[in-house]
Image 1 (cartoon, helix red, strand yellow):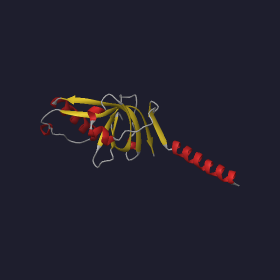
Image 2 (spheres, rainbow, N blue to C red):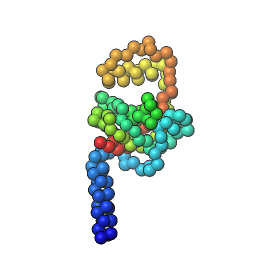
Image 3 (tube, rainbow, N blue to C red):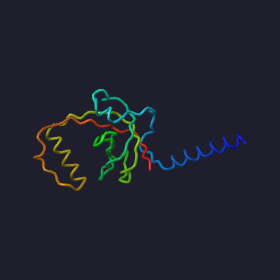
Image 4 (tube, rainbow, N blue to C red):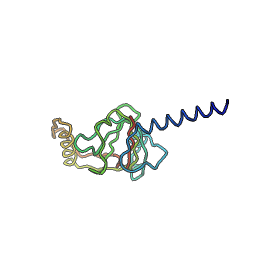
Length: 156
């Protein structure tokens, strides 16, 4: 009787794991890391992580509307987010990823952008989102930390 109970429990566990795998989409390379890094830790001390491979998890806030070449992932702290950028046409994140949970592996990178680069970037983003942009709102360059994405799993 005890063996039957154990078999039933194990069967339910295997079924649940299989069902969870069915509800996930994989993009890019297979994820190899097992230990997750909190987005708050990366954003709190980004220089410590530049050039390092990390595994993060969070809710998908936004996805590139034109090519699916980036997505923004929410951190655990309110209003916190990090952008995942992938090579154009190599990985394409779908718009349907918004609101779902993503597990992403990639390398933390830093972009030191001039004022002109910030303007071009914001202008491009506004065009993608169908929004207007006033370049007079940009007064200087800025440093941006993001993740160069290698692989992702988006769960329903």
